[in-house]
Image 1 (cartoon, helix red, strand yellow):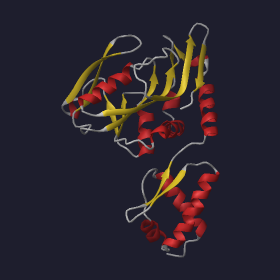
Image 2 (cartoon, rainbow, N blue to C red):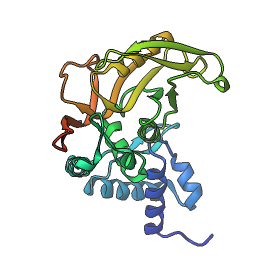
Image 3 (cartoon, rainbow, N blue to C red):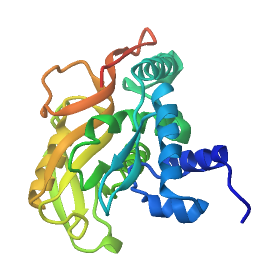
Image 4 (cartoon, rainbow, N blue to C red):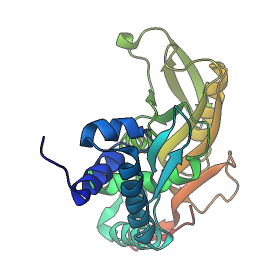
Length: 270
């Protein structure tokens, strides 16, 4: 292989680290990849770290010791969060998104990989330093965001079903009461999904009173596991008192006036 120049090494390092957030790469790995000394790599990593700090692209973290290395810690600058939240509000605050019954159509946003990945990077930020074993969601609209959050945090994703599937084996079924309509719903999760004593992060697209999130907390207790946090894309302003308290949201829905064709949604400080 011909000699690899400094700018080529830096470009490759940035690509590798950002494509694999939270994954630790040793200096030996990069040394073998580029055929250069650790001292040279240290200089390259200092340059990469400077680039990320200057443009607020996240952090390049270093772990000392024989088993150490370097990894990319994704984060989003406050101004970028503000701009992106305002963009989402502009996209959602349109009367043609109102569905009969006062619901809001958001599938085009939640199933857009570029938008969903940006949402996930922001939603994952409060949980980077938490001991998360799994990212959990409930079918169906929360799946794209939860999958991206799992990618950012480098954790496996689990989907709680609304009904059992024979192909998934023995499952635990649980009834829960929705916080808004007080209807009884069912959720189901195969017994082999979660290891005993796990810490899980619940991710969903929407929260009104928190009944589903509370149901997930109760379901995890059946697995002798714990929900350490909840993240939702959108939560309603009312009721103010949810059935859970430890949650983060990107957007706050104040109200939907179906008759007037008005949606009032605003950013939240996640």
